[in-house]
Amino acid sequence: MKQYNAENLLVLPDTQTADPGPLLSITPESAGWDLISFQVRRLATGDSWNFDTGENELALVNLSGRYTVGSDKGVWSGFGGRCSPFEGAAHALYLPRRTKFNVTAEQAGEFAVTWCPTDEDHEPWLIKPETVRSGLRGGDNVTRQINDLLPPGSPVHRLVLVEVYTPGGNWSSYPPHKHDVHAVDAAGKLLEADLEEVYYYRVNPPEGYAFQRVYTDGGCPMHQAGFPIDAVVLARDGCAVLVPEGYHPVVSAPGYTTYYLNVLAGSAQSLMARDDPRYSWVKESYRGGDDRLPLY
Picture 1 (tube, helix red, strand yellow):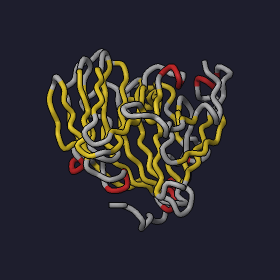
Picture 2 (cartoon, helix red, strand yellow; picture 1 turned 135 degrees about the horizontal axis):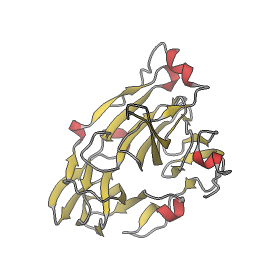
Picture 3 (cartoon, one colour; picture 1 turned 90 degrees about the horizontal axis):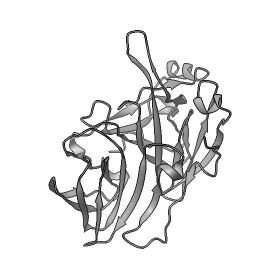
Picture 4 (cartoon, one colour; picture 1 turned 60 degrees about the horizontal axis):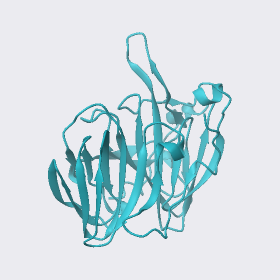
């Protein structure tokens, strides 16, 4: 097992990379886990990037710009169109294993791409912003906006994708929750899934920041094995935070709206998690919402 700290839980962007190289890259080897690969890429107008999913399922999420995705299983043009993640829900495109494809920028921008191993075959699936389920979660200064891009129950194997917006001064992923054990009850109902997770951050305006704490307790396998985590990570625009195990709340700096794209994969295509019992009571104390949300 790997010992994690504030330095190796944080993945910084490479702002000097040349197209079509990744601005940010996470591999199972660099993260110290088994499943999730994640990249953010930038393309100038007319430039292309080619890839083969191999034995992985894969999803593309537009952050900005507009693209044509061509593949041996279909062609999708006009993918994207928003100027930033703060201007509307994303397009997302799910591609199955053994798919050769290319992404060509109709309009310059950035997109995220993530993949994980699979032994299942599913159909390609284009998710359009108008079909994305969006809503508010929490209350008081724990209110945040959620866009379910690839929610539990989607016709895929493992991947789950969620966009979250947290206004300045608000908390998110709160009460702290974890999903690092696969647990079912006596009737076979899933109580908690064992999931790896990436938080990819954008902040508006971009000089802002958020803090994310990642910590384990005696219910976490790494903690039990003698590799506890207790780190506070400074998350800035364009960086990512790894959540291999443990609880992982977020707080957004006052005056700035924090966006993060969550990518999860693991023992089930699910978001089943357990709250830290010390803080779960706060859900019963909410008295209102936040009039800054929804953003759009």
